[in-house]
Length: 487
Ligand code: AMP
Ligand code: MG
Image (cartoon, rainbow, N blue to C red; front, top):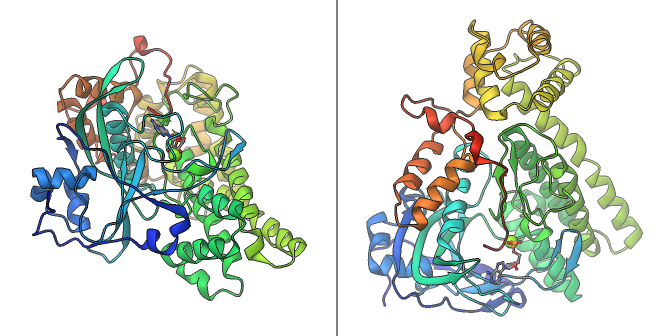
């Protein structure tokens, strides 16, 4: 099948060309009956695709990799990773392919990547496939993150393959077409370092610098500057997760990008009731990736990146360690300052409120939410109303009203700005019960709830009449929520 001729998009294979040791040429499985379930028209346009062309049979073939566009050299990427703390030297794309890179309309290089495209040499025991529900889940949540202005990989399309996938039951299969600044991970560096091929490691670092942190190239120590840049990007990213109550769920080093984009929406979820110890993932028994642990885990993963980069940072190992440790010390202050800046914004605090005042104010309100089992998103959105003279939307959610009133008095005395709060506290997030409802319907063939949910979360800060049920917490009978990996 030929590729759409009127497409202005030119594919390149830069990763495959520059890092052949980490790229296994591979093809996508054929799909018996491709059917488009979701197409991100805005993103398609941003990439230079005509949405109508992507909807055609040739377009679907491109979206699932069964027709390879000119210039594209589909590869499975090799990477290693620490999974729940233990090192696996050979992970790699077991069910995914990097189709190639395209230059978007703004001149940025973007990866076009497939997930669920069939077994690769990295598949180990896996079937290489993905089910409709989890791929739509990634589509919904990643696009919600984008709308919340949080760096993330994007979802261009989900195409049902017409093939069944065996999970606990037989499920319809699908391919997600994912777009990212790159798919370079901490685990990519661990892989290159583990090969012992210093030239490969250097090429990988140069590739990452050129794509994400070009200023590092002219630093006195470019590879230390690369490390510092990743630290800064991840400190900011994880602070933003914490501020919206997002739990990634599987922060293995292979699921942490060099670019600072959120990647791999598997067992992730947004927290309803605020609780530092929240875990959704079915396999995270120890709570390693619990909500409150995320900054610590990010720092731990960055230490693994430092180990991988060590030989590049300095010829002398002792000196390399010293420099890396020094750089990593910046993570905590950077994280704390990003988090506090975000909390000040959520509380609508005017410029000039001292950290020494804002920090206990923020921590105290979170303690109040934790003790009173309060819905995190709804509380913060409702709080602006207190500035406008009606405390009820926030206050009525708190059992201990005496504690709330005392806290609110301290807060209101600082002169918060309600409109500014509305610009950062979302009304709509992809709540777990809404996501499940949408996926269940889509799996059974009804795409309407999913399409509607994507529309709602695409404008998270803009309260709209008629969408009340999307702003409300889970119904009582929804129960405890569990998420899964490798679905
Ligand atoms: P994850 O933690 O979900 O990002 O995946 C960890 C590793 O397992 C990666 O190497 C994936 O490519 C691989 N993997 C996950 N699910 C499958 C599957 N169904 N078939 C083959 N490989 C898989
Ligand atoms: Mg992964």
